[in-house]
Amino acid sequence: MPKLADGVLTLKQPQVDENGEPMTDDYGNPLTVDRPIKQARIRQSTKFIQARDGQQHKCVLEIDFPTEIAISEGDSAEYHPTGAALQKGKIISINETLNLAGNHVYFRTAYVE
Image (tube, rainbow, N blue to C red):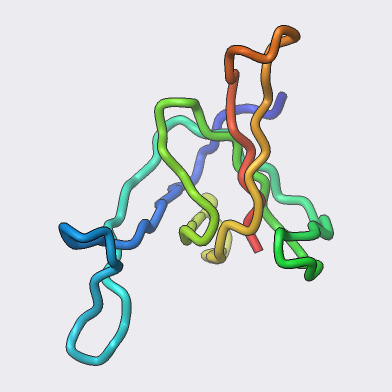
């Protein structure tokens, strides 16, 4: 496993109202809640992932999240490594790593486009 991230990782999740609908500002842009993530393993690698809609996406980041962090497809992620340019994108796919019995999730891997 790679070491923990040295840079800054921010997860941007849509802000929802009491009905569960995403909120927007006056110009129609979605409102987001920024969550800084301290414990995550980040790998910068290029892979092609086929999403649920059948399209192939080029993913440049793989992020391993602990099970306590709630993530979903469509959330945005921003990663600013130390001494490098900002990388941001959308979570395309999520993969859960389970134990052999299949009843305990160790971590979730998110693939960022």
